Image 1 (cartoon, rainbow over the protein chains, first blue to last red):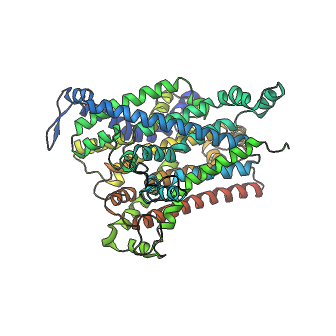
Image 2: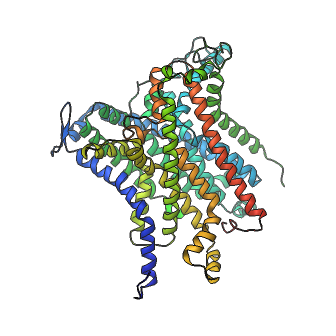
Image 3: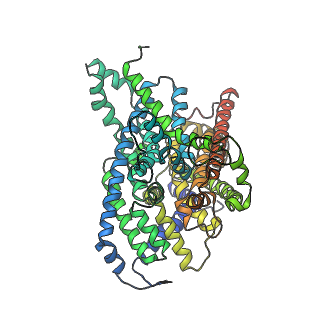
Length: 292
Length: 279
């Protein structure tokens, strides 16, 4: 800085911070904030078969919110979400607990943790496709159950069903639970557990009175991920249900496919409010800034 | 050391099952992609061949997958570079509180929790209204950044929260300028973590589907191309493609992780204690 005028150092530091975050703020402003504002605006617009144009109507919302299909679909999506969340929470907690408290050497912990996270960096679509040979009518699951004599005829509900949807969700998103829970568990002071044991607590008591309360922030962060990913999903539901099951995301993607953008925008706004409401409730239990 | 309790073995069995659950399906399609030319989508194997991999190179059979692979690869590199640079800058800025910092922080979190299809729809609408053409390198690029940046930034926040400030103070006491401190002290210490951010940036972009759906324009990225195939290709050529991209992902992950290990080793053996400032 060439000026001779003295600048307050804290003001200068603030200016440097602003300069550093400007590109970030621009990207998020143009590709996140502006798109959401656009969706909100367009949700009041009108449309016909081939175009959409500025207007101020509430029809898109009225149609969306009074349709019985919408409510049934929300119920279905919530069902997917609750089931996925339960399975992910139990699996995520158990896996993280094993890694954090039962594996004793740090390199082994890191290696096993990486084994759990690597699938996260591969393609979701491929991971969905890869269930076909397992669940299909003549798939591995059916043929091995038949050869074991458990069933006589192949089960029809394995692939292209709600079961397959939840299975795929758990397969895709369990990692989002494992990682934050493992992260909080690694920061639990081991002497707390020893203290509990010295005071006569049983293994189960240590789990419910020490570890679960201290791991709660991790559980909440994982839950936020799972809830938002399942609520906004349209691709897993479509693919794993063979197009038979609906979800809120699929309503939106269908409206987009029909070029009914204002209708899709109104549905999106309702979905966004629902998700934000859920997250708002969950955020009350955790301070994300403290958990980093 | 105390002996292993019984719960250890139960949990170890559970963990093993979880790993089988994670990797089993992918390994299955890996095996099935070597089906004989007359083989189907499920077992039994009808002979063993590389017929379906060979098919991938026939343009007519599968469409433009090599073009889409090149685009996805280029886009991945673009997203990766921008994610690394902006995450480091953001991470440094957030070390102190500044006016607007909590608004920006919540914007970053919002970027993670806003459903992907909304970003796709919103960006598509903006380009539509402004009468601009969507293209993977402009609208697709920006949309993907809203997914990779929060991950990069959260990693950097965690890194700087554990950063020992006395290293910078020492540098400053020795007369280093702010830029020299960053260049010769801070960056070398956080370098292994930057590789991690780069890994997130590349792989999340390379596999991104929902955010690119309405923003890629007429030239598909690889995930879009693969999804198109799932609806009209019913031969093991799909598995061959899946196997190939998964092997590619594993190769990328392996490369990045190797770089991290090598960096750590060099820091440890070179007498430099860079990196130990992170507790």
